[in-house]
Length: 224
Image (tube, rainbow, N blue to C red):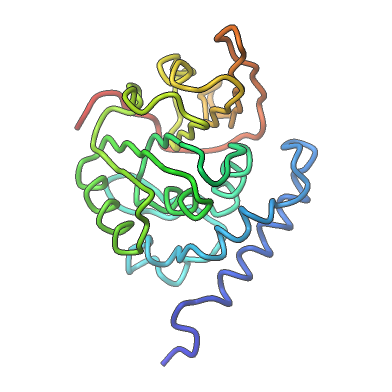
């Protein structure tokens, strides 16, 4: 029988790896240090609870993993980086597009933000909502829908995070940001993808910064 059933030591090693990767990529990201609040959220969130049984041995490896239905759970470093780039904290309201298994959602919830998460694949949305509730996250709402449309009745948001690669920046989401807030998302560029941060300006436009090459599943319009 395991002497660490909650896998706390594995999470601590995962956070150490993420810290090292933040240092290694500081020139590209502008973030040399893993923010303490994000580190604590990663430490508290049991990634193994979001990973299929066949992938349990790899639950705390710094790698994406399949979760079924052609979707993946993101690499822990990328989850931490996107969370840090969002620049949100307790009391803020965040829109997440692409709930997936709910891991990124749970990390955001651990920061004390109110998360509104939209997932286009209905079985994933239902399973994630049940999993997050089971873990006690009361500051999360998940619904099945088209992420391109966002969640207009809850706008404006203090941050928007997209976990699938968009062919272009969805202006519908930009409109749902409050002034000064960040939209963090992967965008298709040429034959690859780049992680972008867009900060909304007072005139409604955005200031864009490209961060790192990434690889995400494509963003799918329309409800399936």
